[in-house]
Figure (cartoon, helix red, strand yellow):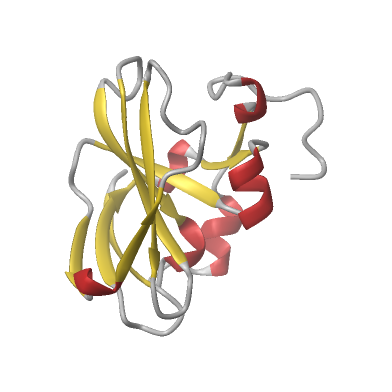
Length: 141
């Protein structure tokens, strides 16, 4: 069930809300960006993530090759503390069908460790552009 969660960066300069259903899973990807940043994410389909404070503190990073024929990903982070709060992307295939956000679940302020522990883990093979499939090895993620 979707619940509107509140989140923020480490220093508190950026705050946002996002309607998430953690029962859909926390996604761990093996692409170089997610692996190097330790990014664990939950998807919000559509464009309903709202920055409630600190929009001027948000920096943008588009990794190469985050732009490919199916879409593009804009990683957003706090310019003060460096925390990646979420990414915004556009993909023209199921289940995205347009705009979406990938929210860094580590930035959610109103989620308990028990709620995070209960959420299923969904593995993505982003390293081979097969995000809807699990990679062969997942233990290191």
